[in-house]
Image (spheres, rainbow, N blue to C red):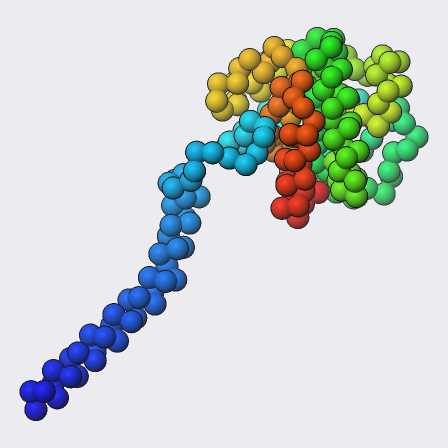
Length: 230
């Protein structure tokens, strides 16, 4: 009888261990993933992106910018808002796609004052990156944003970049936007930079104006491959 009881207890113990092991296989990875996502635990310090990651992301609404028609730029992203519409090419071009029904990824060249040499370099870079995206190129648009009135851009810019859209913001808004950025990027208000904005209006990556286009292209290809929006 004693041997029978011992065998029964051993069998119960083994079954419990198997049950605990089964739960561990399911819930331990889930708990680890949750800890990594919400607490940053176990995430490698290195990253695969070439730009400077803006984490947590900053909303484009913080920029308080307007488009070339004087409408809030954020309306092009927040498609759930009344009267919202997707970002389209500036009216300088006759190629505006009237059938666009959703927002796009944005490569935004932004800085203070006139479009100087770094700004011109950035405009050229983002155009080449956009073209190099091939069949994914239509998912991306380009915007030049400045505290200088761009409602009537120079003939040079308009001629070279006919598919470029324009946005305006005042100096105070630019500085306020910079203060919202992580990693102490307050210098961004005084320099020309290239920013990646997702279709929901989240500013997620930054590059200095003269960054090589290959780095930006690699990041954009990865983003577009992983994203099911825009």
